[in-house]
Image 1: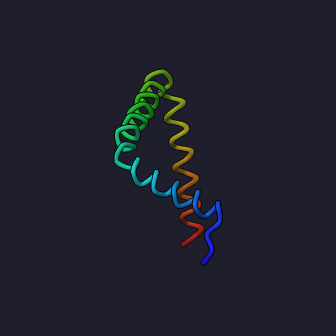
Image 2 (image 1 turned 90 degrees about the vertical axis):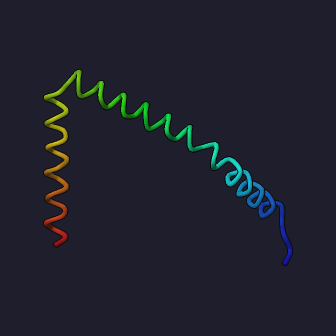
Image 3 (image 1 turned 135 degrees about the horizontal axis):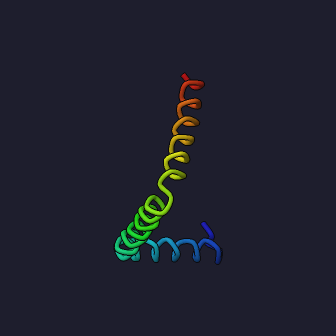
Length: 69
């Protein structure tokens, strides 16, 4: 089998991702924490609008699920 430059670059990229995997976990936790803080601040600033948006999403999900059954 002949390996070209693209194959070699792909393999090295895979190795780098595997090596950086454990280091990405704290970064992921930081992103989740920031998203949670934004969500909490949105609910505190606009509770009624947030409630209506969540109710609308729940209604749409319910409609989709009942159509699939």
